[in-house]
Image (cartoon, one colour):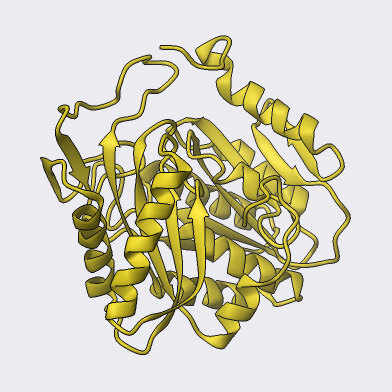
Length: 331
């Protein structure tokens, strides 16, 4: 295994240090807890926090900043953040208006965020609400979840809810908004090649030279089927059709489209996927309001992509356009 790392056990710590060193005016870091927090001055508002295992960057640490998250709690690679980190992050960024946890549907993440909410309630504050994000249409259950997994569609939730929090919405309003976004976004992905974790140093699962995993999870969990490699038109149609059928989306809908790389896919290939998806949507009389193409929620160096569609209303459109100041520049 050849990667830009020193010791595998130091990967997350050194990544977060590099993030903070690169954005010292706006990003703060508590290294021993792996808490990334918004450092720039901001008005009193409901604080938005997310967190999960590392390895999915830019999700979540790179979405901390004006217009999105107020803090992110990073766990070890593919492992949940600690309970004390979540509690400390909530105490630190609360401005007296409460805290909203946005949590992707994985068992460990849910458990620790739920325990943190109970602990904060027991000790008298801050007020906390939680929304579980579960946009993946690939499978109903997996080893990591009870119900659907949370994947790249979560970034739409961060973006829209983060913008609304900047406008001064209260905790109840933001919770309701987060549920509405989650209810209108669907995602499905596939893997061409598995990822390699720094600790293991070898692929996390096996795929033959001509195999792909359709519906793969962010940690390499099995999807709907393992099948032979097919051309882009066929693969992307499989993903897009599954997403369209699940909500379902219909002619006349207006959507935001996200073609998300899983970490190891060239940007040119993602734009091929985007073009194919646009053609499919056009044929179904679904209008694309805005397209997002890049790595938004990855699985280390996995090759493949996911397709997310968010059915829009005027409020969603307005909040998607709200300016952000976060470490990545392509949102």
